[in-house]
Image 1 (cartoon, rainbow, N blue to C red):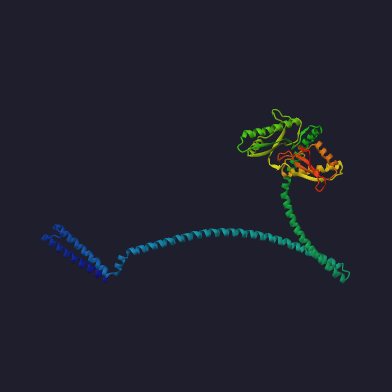
Image 2: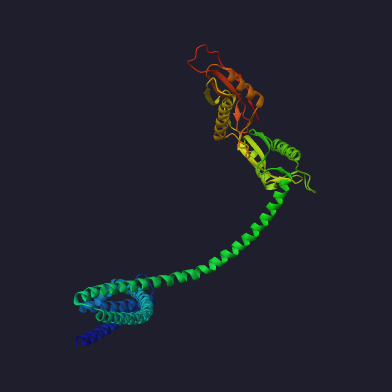
Length: 459
């Protein structure tokens, strides 16, 4: 009711203001009055506008004064819109969270379905296993009944053969022990049966492997028979004295110097010179080139290139050219190249071996002691890195004449002599080993005559 009265009041007041404005405008227009230096017509329009504004202002002011809710809604409109937007964003976030939770629940549902399927598969496998266990249990029960039947039969036989109560009791205990042992034997046999079944399966699996190995052995047998035939042919030729070069025989030894900045052509010439020495040695031993080849030695291109590449590194290199296999007369010989750093092993004057030789020894005894010193020097040289002959294992030879001269000198001596093997020159990896026997009276002997030198190895 209050709202209706308010509306009626507003209509009446608006009408009065309109009438007043119209009358004022009429009089202004009739008297041709002007405001703000405007034309009368424009002044009348301005009065009409002011009248309308007054009506609107009065209406709005009355509503705001009489209705607090309308004033609050009008002035808090912006805040309400902001609050509504915040609530909308919050609702959107809740919606996103709910959608994520929904997706997670769907994934969890799929996982649960997979787990359910797996559980059903496990349940089916368990039921199958249960059936197998039941079958095994039935077999075990049957075996137990058979054992009990055997036990009953044994008890009957025991009762029939009892001559007396005491003896029967003793035999009964013995039979019980045997029955228990039989049960243990049965259990053992069952275990052995299972083990044998496993062994049988393993042997069946191994059968294919054995057959494959047998086939391989047959192939190896055929190959060995061919090799034996070749070796027999080689043996026949060896008996005829046709072997020219042994496997591992040194055909050439030398030193290739590669100073820093050396030209590759110079290094190649040194290497080719060693190959030429090996060629001459092979020809001298009876090897011959095989047409259309022109050389008696055969070296793979890859080996030669690798050797040249190694020799071009700065330094001094000991190079040996060796035969790869036994070769007969008239055959070419394949060779390989060995390269070692040519380092100084012994300085000039180094003592390689020494010992004291007593007077009064026989010639044979003196020779044995001197040979022992030579062997010591040979072994020490090889341990230090001196290249030895792959076939003989020695690093040089000693002149037989000078060796006998040393023996005669030692045999004629009447005092103990300290004999040393001394390096004549600096000795390097490539060799050869050149030493001399240096003899002096052992320390503590009167009338010492000083050291005497005799002989050196030739290699």
